[in-house]
Amino acid sequence: MKISALQTARYGYAPKLPAILAGNPDSIALEVGKPTQSIADQTELKKLFENTYGKPLVTFVKGKNPEVKKTLRVGVILSGGQAAGGHNVIAGLYDGLKKGNASSRLFGFLGGPSGLVEGSYVEIKDRFMDQYRNTGGFDIIGSGRTKIESDEQVAASMATAKKLKLDAIVIIGGDDSNTNAALLAEHFISKGSSTQVIGVPKTIDGDLKNAMIETSFGFDTATKTYSELIGNIERDANSAKKYWHFIKLMGRSASHIALECALQTQPNVCLISEEVEANKMTLGQVTDYLCAIIAKRAENGENFGVILIPEGLVEFIPEMKRLIAELNDLMADKADEFNKLSGFDAQATWLAKNLSKASAKTFKALPPAIAQQFLMDRDPHGNVQVSRIETEKLLISLVEAKLATMKKTGKFKGVFSAYNHFFGYEGRCAFPSNFDSDYCYALGYTSFVLIANGCTGYISSVRNLTAPANEWIAGGVPLTMMMNMERRHGSKKPVIRKALVELEGKPFKALLKNRPTWELKTSYIYPGAIQYYGPDEVCNEPTQTLLLERGRKKKAAVAAKKKK
Image (cartoon, rainbow, N blue to C red; front, side, top):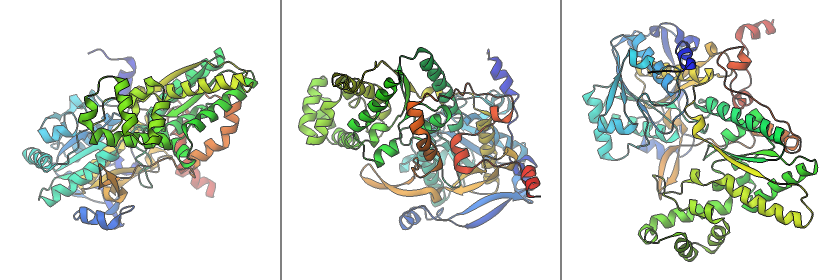
């Protein structure tokens, strides 16, 4: 098979590890903290997780633990959407197992969680693993979005684990996947299975994080990939000086990607869904805000600019959120009736009668091409597929109409011409940055140490990420510690709470401080492509979000020198 020069070079990259993981595995002991509790709904969650609730935080420290040398049999699952670095998680897990005991074995379940249910797997061996080190994608074993929820699925999963004599299963995924990992760990114990379950924090959206999970893997690579593209567009916009570029960025539930890309590239506008919701901005008010900036820049002779839009924006605008909620309920309650309708006109007429007066008005005001996107095939949960709604085109249409009105009254004297873009899949499978290569390898190795120490119901945690890699802190966090109860499909269910952009947080405040300047003055930054070789500030810099949230950690030797 022919491979690129870069892939050949990346095969030779040796991921950096925290110092505690760099030695022999039998020299790693656990420092056990105090019992933990969930972030909310403690009583309900304690009942649901009788066997795994309240486990302590664990941190790896120097010590002796001969148990890590025992032979282990472990299964690994890639769950949900792709994120750069997944292959290195598996590589770190594999290398840890083999370093502990060369006879240990790793099995990869094919196609995500369904591979565990159906007993579809491949054994991962040296030659196979070496083809995927430091590469992007999830193609080593594939991924999937199956949830292991029913009694039949749990029983099938236990049967597979028993057949393969698995000591543990590692689930690499986002908040939903790790919620599933927590439930699986509880089910296994309650049904007498000794198979442990460990989670790994994955999602490019950046919404799986807290005090102990500083970032999810893939976020660093995705935002750097998008920022390169945004920077290229900014350079083009500043060269041609005649187009406005509306760029939608992946990230449905939270605006972390848009915010990070804005901090890296300094566009004229970056909409933050959480701010729009907090200020209860209507679609009309969002349009007015954009038009005001476009008009002011036109006064300065700058009929061009760049606007970043989070993928999930429409769900944060009050009247749109209400419309989507009503559509979801209608499609669930009257699916048969709706599916008999032929053509958009018939659907629109039916909706006008079945939606509330306010939502019917909102739907009617949408451009027909956009309105039809609200009625496309539902997602696996029966909901509107928000990612398929072309919010960037919707805003262009509304801005064009508003500017035309402003032109008639003399409030806009410029020229408006727009292009739309959506950056999503472009960032999920890139070659991982050095940061993600190192971080993922460390997460995988940490998973092995947790397994070797008998932990279950934990998520792999590597912290202190703005320091050099050898100073990172490794350990495990109880999955139940990150959970609360939320209403899903009409009933309350345990879930890991998504981390939204904090409007009082340092990253958003940095945007807020610079926004008035960026709106009117062309202040673009051109990050360029991800670099793998060169000085630290070029190839090993973490995201701006991490640096602002955690502060830059200096090397221990430098810090000690300064104290003297």
